[in-house]
Image (cartoon, rainbow, N blue to C red):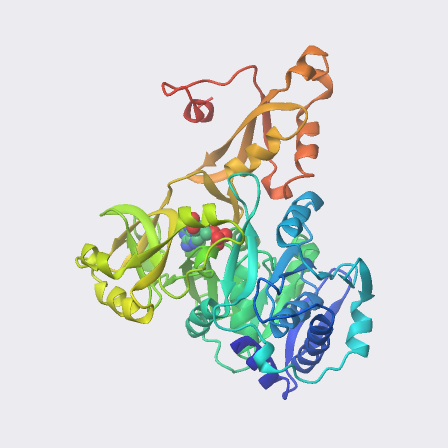
Length: 527
Ligand code: AMP
């Protein structure tokens, strides 16, 4: 894999691979340390699992639990070297959510970075430090590394049934995404500092990890504690020398609230990249004003097509125009189109498209399709038809494609985003299936039924509200008083991440019904 080659290459330099700032300490990990520690851990993994053949049905993925600690990156690289996929589990996941993911994966090995321990065969445990000091740190044979169509990582995202879906991303997928994105960000082997703030369980983080470590950049990694404490965050940013900023628009908006966040404060900053949710025009405008030397890039893409598939450099004409900002032109070698014209569901076809959801043929079938050679004629009117023709040859007449569920319009080669076909929302940059929250609410003892609706403020989702009908036994036994919004929220937070807990809860005796006999969500939203 290119990232592992990169780490090896830059381990011969004195460069730092990661500088992590936490509330009480700063940790630097050199490329040499990353290389050697990940070799030791990979060797431990290889020697402590019963590998018979080289197939990933035998090689179970490895969950890694933690936040932004440098050992997260060591663990991720070690699993790649051992030929296995990693599954990042962020510290913010409640235990029931992590457990449901672990049950899905049935791992042989589990790395707990928070505890500094690896759990393996029959519940045996060993400390990470002990592995680093006692296992051989010489190079792992490249033949063992994850390669070709094998999974490099599996990211679990909110699923409408209440169970997270595991998006499988292969070495091939990453080799399609990373060189393109490295070019877009100007990360080319020079000494560059790249911001590393999003959780490793969120696909946006793949951008800095893969572009950065492949090309000898230094990741400036910000812990959640620091990101949540503005004084600490600003002091870290000021001393960071960050050249490339990668975050959600929500995170940068919070920084923009402070006037000091400008080009004087971060003199080396030359690129902003945003992916994952709508980049509001005012946010882009402020950035162009305050950082006149930096490019503002809006990117678009889902986890299922390896983070991002289109980018556009935002200029004053865009921000002064009336339309919402474009989300970019497709990356080379990808055929991106809408099912209906001029506006319809966005379909992405090409080498960045995942093979599907882990252990979930049903959901995979619903969203992942193939465009076959016999269907070519259907697409001959599209402007970039030649890309599809080329892909047909590359993929032997069977091109993988992903139905995004996003509604878009493509004009003059630019993609414009126009919302969703389903109940998926983005809140604070997080991807949430509304039905995931509802299904977990219904699992609570106190709840009979629940409907969650997004509450909009100036065309942006401001927060979520849940309408809850309590279970009869709570009503009958007159326990209603004891079941308040706080109880519901606390109990829900045991099942889903905090960002999925609706801010506002309203209790109802019954739900409004529409003419089809279904719960009338529209009526609820207007309540
Ligand atoms: P995720 O898989 O978490 O990266 O979320 C992917 C979804 O985020 C996409 O399917 C879109 O709905 C949304 N999204 C990503 N980038 C943008 C963007 N630039 N503008 C609007 N929505 C976006």
